[in-house]
Every structure is written in C-alpha cells, then in structure tokens.
Image (cartoon, rainbow, N blue to C red; front, top):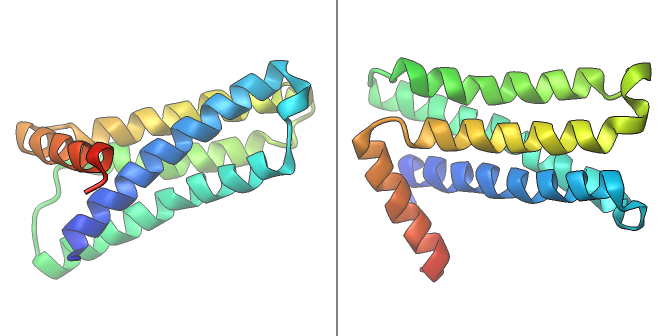
Length: 139
C-alpha cells in the first residue's frame, strides 16, 4: 500500500468513525441507557484519526514535491481545529448537560469536513467513489 492509498483509507476511517460516534453521541444525549465509557474511547480514536490523515497527507506532499490544493488543505486542517475546539469546550460549565450533543454535532461536522476535503475536484470525486465502492464491496 502506498501513501496515497493509506491517505485515502485513513480519510474514509475518519469519515466513517466520526459518523458512528456522532450519531451515537446524539442518541446518548436523549437515551441515558446508551451512555457508555466506550463512546468516549471511540470518540477519541475517531478524532485522533484527524492527525493521522493530516500527517500522511503532509508526507505525500513532502515526498512527492506536489502542489497541494488550497481548499483540500483548508478542509483537512479544519478537522484538526474542530477537534481542538470540541476538546476545549468539554469542561465548560454551560455545556455540562449537553456534552453528548456537543460531541454528536461536532463529530458529524468533522465527518462533513472530511467528505468535503475528499470530494473537492472531479478527480478526487472519482477516487473517492472508487474507494467507497471498494469499502462497500469489501475488496
């Protein structure tokens, strides 16, 4: 697997994992019975994946000496800032009863940023759809 494939697969992991924990956290805001410590561990893994995707992307740019699309970088690095903002609000007194809502919406926002970064240009669209088809068919 080359770095481009690794970047693509980790990006899909970021998108999928943040979708799952986002929906789980939103449901947990209203269903106390599904509030588990596992949600926070899964959220941590999903959000750390933003750093992995960015690091692999930086390696690709540095090793191949390519020009990075500025919007791809904007959406990609915005995911890291979104994680930092979520983390900074977690102990805020006005959010204490809405923590699951914060992380649910925040994780879905990160998922959306990941999707937007992946589908910026027609060539990225085709690569993204090919990767999605491979994921769905488990190839």
